[in-house]
Image 1 (cartoon, rainbow, N blue to C red):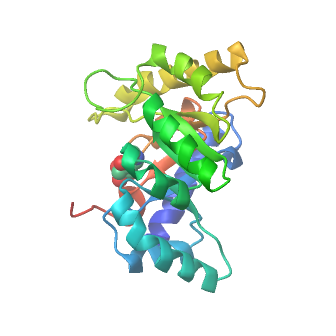
Image 2: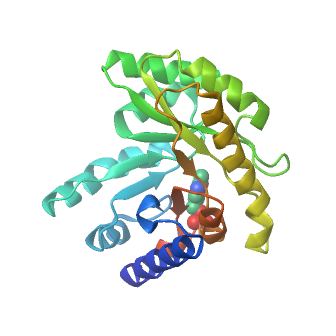
Length: 235
Ligand SMILES: *Cc1c(COP(=O)(O)O)cnc(C)c1O
């Protein structure tokens, strides 16, 4: 089932990209494995899944080694993404486990990540989470504060801000999520116009099972898909 879902999902990503005049290779699929047992994750790896997203440190700690060992036995390597809210006291684990932390939502957290990354001589790639909708999502910088935060964090030497992430509110019609995605894209464009990073901010992490096609139309470079690959979760 996972193999078929993954193929379905990849095809949908490709269709959405081509339909929007974009290169499908510019879009990274992150398989979200929260609440998913190891055998299903292994199936996804067998079908070529490379990017794995988890939203809780405790759960990621349990999966990290067996999943990496499995991938390694197949001659492959997993790239881990932290996509859930991160408490500052978990920054150390996050820096150890994840290649990209999507959910940096405060300067205090960024500071803590910077400090922990410095200890292990890592430059941690992060995204700033932006609260594009006032109503539903709890975490993230308000859009007007994201610019200020990006500028501040640029002075942190052990953090590399690669772009922005948002979670659109759950809506019945995915079309209704479009304004939140276009808002994030505008914000990224604005950041890049200000040229506060010499490298540019390139990653736009937006779109989940219900709305990733719309997100791609609006410029997503990373989509985070759980149910669409692994089926409904129990929790
Ligand atoms: C769970 C989760 C997803 C995936 O959601 P699905 O609806 O299962 O695709 C994506 N992003 C974040 C931050 C999540 O917590």
